[in-house]
Image 1 (cartoon, helix red, strand yellow):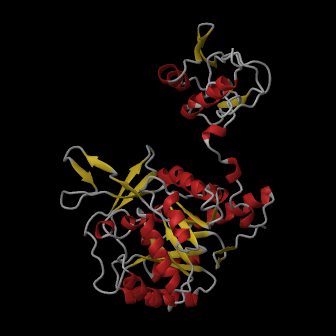
Image 2 (cartoon, one colour):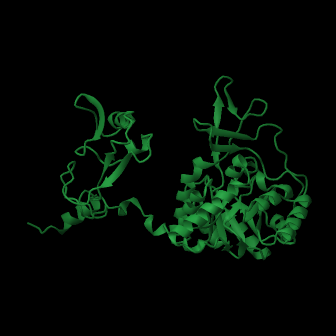
Length: 441
């Protein structure tokens, strides 16, 4: 059976599934229930500095975007960092770590961007016996207006500065949680590394307004008639998070930096995808809030079974395995050709492929044959765009089949070559180079 244990920047856990800093990790009661359910670790909900706790709204804090079958696809919240007293959180963290020494317990922190504030909180957190800290440089709502959260994460110089303060004033591993609300996520990751951070985690939530009640003309959720932007998470953000994770894993300046992946992870397969793109652990929030702590059972069993099937014996063997296959557009093989194929035995003749292709794409699907409703690909027009397969309601009814030899009936070009944009004659750089090389008349 595959070994799911992980050692992430010196923090050991029985499996890579950790709960992210959020409501599910805001108190001892929740965290103990999570550990009993099988989670390998938690990131305790963000602590603030000593003094009066932050104040949350007394009304809806969460909003959602549902699919047609009411599945929660995107989740939006305006909840702030913990609104429980610091001393209560510290006491509970200490007790939980004593009772569950084999589980990872990382504490999320957010205090003003002042060295003294960080110097004050680091020793009291360290005294709890926690395994590490995660610097919350990502929350986009509420605290960012006070100069914390994503307000820090959007300025690489601040990220580097605070990471350095923490490394200089604590023995605990430092994980920097990055905001996706930035143009190039590699810049704060590079800054975190320069500041000495041990790892990064991403993504935090995305700025969002989840919906508008068009009868009352109020954003939802609203507080006494007014709404504000919140942090977006859930399955809908997974593609964005995967891309950002891969950018950090690939970039020369951050290559090899440990990453904890966050964003829309609901199943073992989601987790495996994050690991394949470079994540040593994954953090889950929305799935636990929507389905409960027991979702981890499927994650552990599924990942273990898949690893056994593929011959992987440890999580380390998966981490970053797909990165060599992620490249830039200019390096893709422009001579690679695929054509759509419709399985006539599976086709229910709904016509969605034809409508999509005819109205918005390349007019490459016939809708009739011998006077009957029949859908078939016209390879002379098919560019292999995949739109028909995307809209088809039947799994595997439409597949994209590679052409391995012969001539592409659409372009007349011979199949089997390999030419990237850097070599293509239509590339101005290639064209101009060839023109310069021509002998003078």
